[in-house]
Each structure stands twice: as structure tokens, then as C-alpha cells.
Image (cartoon, rainbow, N blue to C red; front, side, top):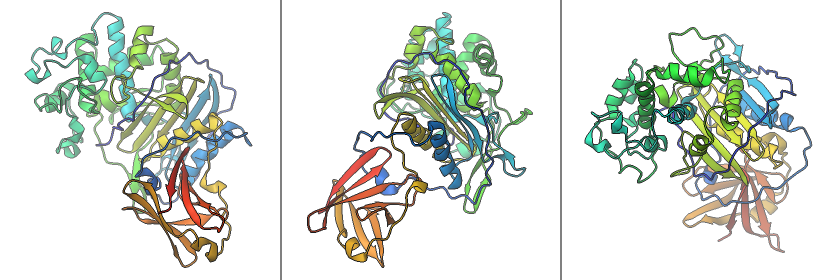
Length: 487
């Protein structure tokens, strides 16, 4: 399954309308990609509970746009990202740039006008379409689905449209079915898509809990068509894209000749390879749209500026129900800032679109290389814009520390119950190994601070007693601190 990224837990804050002003010139960079090898973030950090800590503030040594560009470039240099990125705060564009190639075979660079498949970012457009129909009196989100699909199975008797919007219907996601990998290659109608899951047993009773489901958003697209009398493609085009002047957005199709469309890639053992095919009728209203960074900025400005929905409908769209999920959007609090966000993941493309209403910050990251880079880039850029320190691997300089000092750090440190980190020495190299994880070499920045040569550049501080022996360590990564006393 490729066009979904389940969300995290979230908290809500009300947005305000941004104003457009392009005061920074748009430009593109075209670096040559080296062979690609995608890695996850430092494994032992991901495996333990995150302890929230206030990130240290710092004075900008550079303009935020320059530092944001350096963040993206660090992922490009590590062969984890190619795509386009736009950052705008209070209507002023801070960064608007393409990286790497839209087409590797022809060496065509990505730029601000490159069109990318959005994957599950599509869901917010589907949710907005439903809420538009409610604003126009064509439906109510509290309506039962069977009001519009009277022949639906009895198991759907209690499912409301709101359950579909918030992933609380219990309908299983068809992208998890055993035949998905082979069936995604063939064109399909919305009715045929619905038939794939309509008779499957529910995973839970409607409204009982949150479970991300592409089936629910396919069903919403089907309802848009039945209630409006237009195809989903026509409805979104006429009611959202045209009014907002989103001229570079639409419903994707293999058959269409689409200028500036990016090709999608994934990582192979020796570098990028062409991604698997998917017929775009399959993701439908759950993941079938394409767009550009500039058009998605227009969308954020239109949506949060009150140009798409009524105030009541916008409030509904961005108010979480369960699992931090609202209607096609997740709502979170990150380092004290509210964030309204959704990511996307479809064959050959990973995307992220985030809006921080407290300071009207929009970050758009669109990638035509599968991987986790877009969400990581979004988080780091937001930290920089908010005046927080972000350490890149290129910032870290290795120094020499004697083996005698390194030996004082050898031992076992407890990061969480039943989860330890073992520090050892191999030759003159300090090594870290967390429970169930591979060993990682540690490189000294000073006698007490060490780093891992990883994109996320986790750092470890050893806390010493008066004899110089380590009594504990603290891992610093992504604005979080994780302490571990020595056992």
C-alpha cells in the first residue's frame, strides 16, 4: 500500500488568513544525484518513548530561508530527497526551490512548477468537497451513509458521513487487501472500488475508535459524485481549483499529456529505480490528485482564509475527533506551536503539507523519491522558522579523544524499562548498541559529546562524576532529550 501515511495524535488551534507577498526570488537548484540508499532515523531513538523537552532558542547566524535550503540540501546530498519545497510565512515566501530531477532519464530538473502526485494530501480536498455540499444544503455530515446508498449492507446501518471523514467507520482499507498489489494496475470505476469493500466485516463499531481507511475516502468521493451529479474530478476542478486559481492542479491520469509532470522513483540497492505502476483510478478520492508547491500555497491561503468553506465548516474540518484526526487533516502541537498537516505516500512520491496557524506558516514538501524525508524536512524547517536550533550532519566536526577517556563511558545505560543502550569500544572507536538494534559508531565533538553520522544527526552527552567516569547519558534528537542512567 503506497498512498497513505497514518497520522499522529494532535491538538487544535484556530488559524488566521495569510496574505500573499513574494519578496524572495524563486529559483531552482539542479544537483546531480549519487546512488541512493534510504535509511531510517537512528534506530534506538525511534524505539523508545519520546520525552518532550523545550528546544533551545538561538540567534540566526543566517536568514531562515538560507538555513531552510541547507536543511533540504542535506537530504539531497544524502540521496534521500529530490523534489520541490516552498516555505511561506504570513504571506511572504521564504523558500521556493526545486531539487534534483523530475526525470532522471532525461536529466530534467525539478522546479517550482513541477507537478507531483499528492497521495493522501488528496483527502483534505475530498473532505472540503463534502463540507461544501453541506454548506449548500445538499447533505449533512451527520447523515447516515445509507441515506444516499440505500442498498448498502446492514453492517453500514450506523455509519455516518462524519465517520468516513474522521476514519472512524470501521470499514477496512482496501489497500490492505491481499489482491491490492496486482489489482492496482487495472483501471476501475468508483462503483467497482466500493464493491471491493462493501461486504467486508467492520473492524469495529462506527465511532468506536480511529483506524485509517482509504476505503472511507473512496466512499466519500463516490458520495460526492452521486449527490452533486458531477464526477469527482469535475467537482474538485469546478468548485476548488478554478475558484482558487489552482491552474496546475488536477486529477492525475496516465493517458493525459501533462506538462511538467514528475516521474516517480523509489530506492533500489544501487540507486533510484522507477516506481511501480498504479492506475490513478485506484486511489481515486483517497489519493488521486496532483499539484505544485505554488498551488498548494494558494489552497492553504484559500482554505484558512475563509474562501472555500463557511466558518462553521472550516471549524469542523480542523477539529479532531479521535486519534487527533479531523476531516482530511491532522492537528498537532509541536514544540508549543499548533500544526495542521497531512502527508501523502503513493508509488514514487512522498509529500507533506503543513500549516502553523500561530504564525501563518505554510511548508510544502513534494518529493518524487519515496522515503520519509518530506515529513522530516517539514519538522526541521518549522523548527528553524520558530527560532529553534537544528543541527545538520555537516555542522558537526569530529575531534580526537583518547582511548583512556573513551573507556570511562563503557557500560550499560537504561533508556526505558527493558530497553538499554550498551556503550563499548572497538579499537579506538566508541560504539552504541540499543536493545535489539545494530551497533552504531559514535564520533566525538568534544570529550563528552558524540554524534552519529546520520541525517538526523543524533547527539549523545555523557555526564561524568568528579573521577571522569560516566554516570548517565542523554540523547538529543529532533528537539527531544532522552536521559539514560548508567546501570
